[in-house]
Length: 350
Image (cartoon, rainbow, N blue to C red; front, side, top):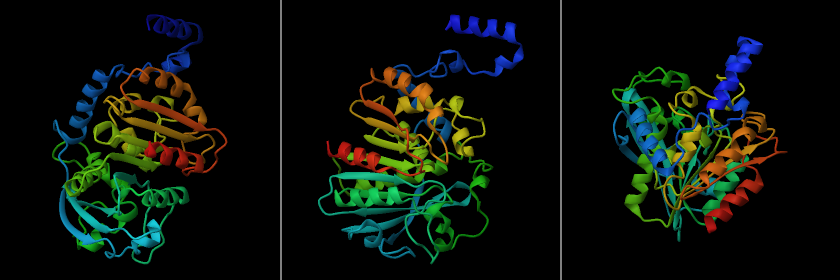
């Protein structure tokens, strides 16, 4: 590392201040911003992340204020989406500070031994609600149907004020004095912690609810785009999530094409994502996989992944879990590609 700083000083001397803005990874140190080099480091960093998000040593999760039958509450019938009829299905409604409300959908299927949290991205919905069309991602929907047939019990989790949560206020008769747009969430000042807890709390509270109803041999989380980001954050914080599959969800800030790339919540994480990924595999027996579409029209194309993916995988090979970062070089759609869906289904079967 001393050599790198010396080289940086030499370049600045020779070429002027233009080089001073270059991050260290351009000089051959792709993991220079990573601090969690061991499992113990990552677990300690996890405690710091929880403190930053909730302002407490443990997550303070939102309260379930009501439940509704899963076949009602304005959504389309579950068999239309899942491809089969759940044994049980229920909406869980949550309240959080600053009049932020959310709901998740929990469906169980006969014979399930696994539970999967499916995290929607920005605008992404799962049901046609209030007669309005949903922004649907075909690869996600197809994978959910395959998981329901596996069978796995499923939690459908939308981002706050996105997807199914566009309608939470209307169903719960909430006074119109809370935030109404995604960007307004960034301006909220919780009594403790940060607005990031609005994104993570409902999924964790739903996991607790599901585990109060039955036990599972395997618990996983997946998502694309903002849902991929949510998946990585949940895996970093919650060791009970044994398998995580994030598609086009995030890359470390230092490798993005611009500091402004990604939504505000991505830029609000107080640590390098290199450390966040390390947290997801700091505990024995877990698996965490990142997938990227090389020509993704949305975000995180190949050039933002290749500098760090292999070096990080090498470092995390010494951790007590399995980590992988994969690029589908020719993939040009912002979606879960069939090979990735097959990978996820095969991995869950192991």
